[in-house]
Length: 258
Ligand code: PEP
Image (cartoon, rainbow, N blue to C red; front, top):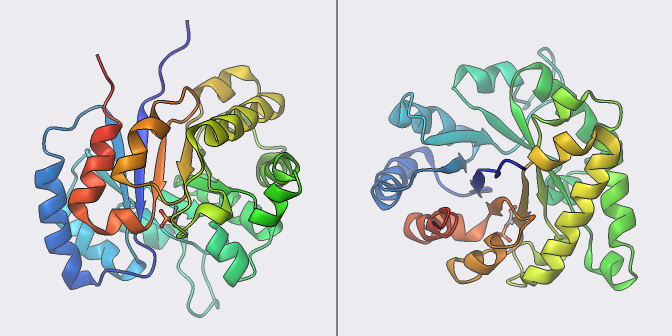
């Protein structure tokens, strides 16, 4: 019998929310999620809000923090970069790696994504690895090839233990910030494909335990159906996570049904 995977909901604030705004966000979000158990919740504000958020959350187990990016280097002359140990020092547990905005706007290659992933794992930060195809790639039926190659480049050769620390986010680029959500069927198909491919790289036991999130214009209205698909284990939410009440509704959609 397979063990059910705990649902995982992460909110990527992108370049929004100042350190002073994060306090009122957290107040509203904590009230709105007070009764939620059995869902892993991760907030991913900008670097500059992490210290404040960490101070407010204290050691609270219920809401964890993630970072939007991280250097692959441990320390040194890398002006403007933030290291894994700096994040750990703020009690950050997760880090986004390979978000499509980093790949597309900041030239992050598969090789850079892999280096960051490896650094995160060595530093006991859990990577949320983002993969996904562009509209052009989907229209030319390339999505499986793209998912396979991004996943292989990032994790091939890692041990099953390392791979089991990674949360994967399937984020079709055409659905990010566009208001176009993949249909539950499209998303489920992609998730199943990713899980099967993970099984080839790391064995079925790791693949069955791994959590695969869907990301791309998720809203409270689309969350319920997406999250009820068998291979969708959670959501990575951008725009809709900026409103604490809307984001809490997405979290509520992930509560296991009796
Ligand atoms: C994201 O930034 O990862 C994302 C999915 O954004 P949005 O929900 O706004 O599409």
